[in-house]
Image 1 (cartoon, rainbow, N blue to C red):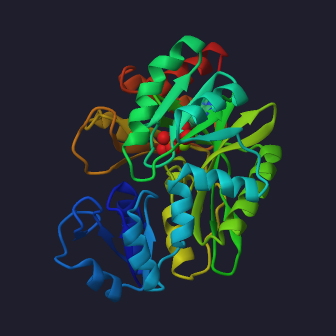
Image 2: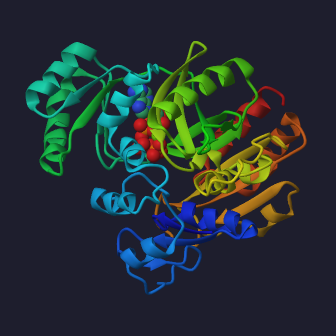
Length: 380
Ligand code: ATP
Ligand code: MG
């Protein structure tokens, strides 16, 4: 099988690595340059998009912000999985909110803002604090504003107005601020036959709006809720492939924060901690192969490497530690790679995470240090 991935970043790279044992070959579209490239080397394959579409068996996407004209061309070929509408739902917060309402899935109350009047109405209707998010183009906490006090209204508005003026059918989704206790996510895969296989929930910690740490958790009541919400959402989208849902946990209840119609950063732990990783399962689903088991094989955490391109080699001497670099040029805060840390049980996982933290700079890995320091405070 030959699969074209729309997007040529780390997710396409990891699909390529996971697909090789199944003889699934990946080419990737670099959306910025329009080149078809090899996902590991980024070398141009000297092929036009139309030719690539004709040559491959399946087309899929590694992110949701794909220009709509490209999605249309791919959909016309009959090879795009998941569908263009499912990918677009993840890339436009208005469509996403509609979908959640239609699937009867709990989520934060919201209003759509296109004008100053809408902005004032959102404040009076939802109250403060508010989180304001650009409908299009947001990721890793970018394109977001917090409005906590009345005296910020007039300083935030010009920034909102500027974002709205950027054209391209932009809007703002204003959401009530959720005082969540935790953030968790579920990653799962749905086959062409409608069968679903779900991974255990991951507990997620963010630094400056970017995922920093994910740990697979075993909490049956929350898992049940998340699985029901996943099934309703995936069915509404008639989804095929890996889908991720991010949640806020509040008093034992899950509210959906957002959906990602693709393999997801909070599922990278599955490379070492699950029977079949999310990348292989996405390829299996879109290629019409049977889905692989999503069972946890070992308790596992994933640490994101943000803005660093060198780590002490000693990390590799720690049993259960695996580094995955993305081969990207260093930039402040950029996702450069991740470390998966596995162990035989939850207690020894915590000890291993502390050993890893001891080798890493606190300024570069604040969430990990914060997490492991809480463990030692409680005598773990
Ligand atoms: P990513 O691409 O990393 O998932 P994103 O840019 O798509 O991020 P969100 O996931 O919507 O944006 O928001 C980023 C983070 O901001 C959330 O993980 C959460 O910590 C916080 N956040 C977002 N919405 C709310 C809200 N309504 N109430 C409280 N916190 C929020
Ligand atoms: Mg998010």
